[in-house]
Amino acid sequence: MADESVFRGAIEFFNDIGIYDVVLPFLLIFTIVFAILEKTKVLGTEEIDGKNYTKKNLNAMVSFVLAFLVIASTKLVSLVNQAMANITIIILVSVSFLLLIGSFYREDEDVFLTGGWRTTFMVLVFIAIILIFLNAIQLDSGQSWLVYFWEWISDNWGTNWAASIIMLIIVVFFMFIVVKEWGPPKHRKGWTGPKQEKQE
Image 1 (spheres, rainbow, N blue to C red):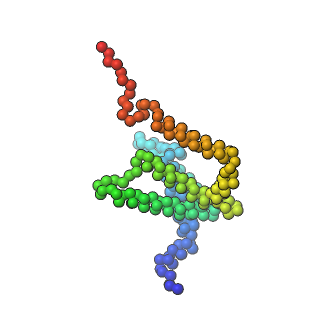
Image 2: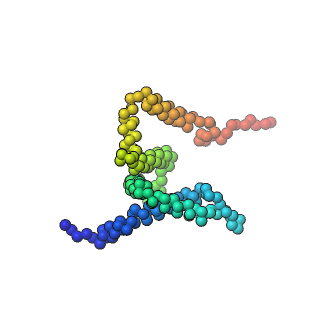
Image 3: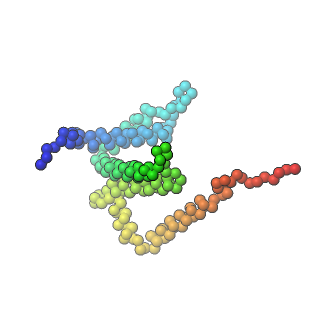
């Protein structure tokens, strides 16, 4: 058996002292909550020299408390670690996809998704993140919410209410397509408004 490398030993040491179970989840939750509070300005602002600034002390304190509450629960820490590991995979897949698209562009062209491609990509990533968290949250039986919902849908797939929900989703989808495609003329490209008659 090969000897363990120095770097692998360092990783194991970090794991033993709680870097991955305490420090990293704490920093992650603190950073995300602090960024959200700074962006939304939920806790208000204060005016200094005529300029409005966020209350960083309150935002930092709330973020600090919430981060500590998360790491105090082993279930929440396990959920965060499992979800973030899968989200990292989604990020790697997304970056790989963009790199693949970039191979078809010239050097002076930027690679950005626009229009329907951007919306579709955002929806797919959002659905993937929701599924990741549903799979990370487990019931008392050890079964994840995602598996529970999937089995529940499979067992009730043939009932009338399930068919009604599917039909309702299809109807709403087509209504959205029709309204978006045939909306008011002022929202159409190239429309400059009603023509006004010239007064003599």
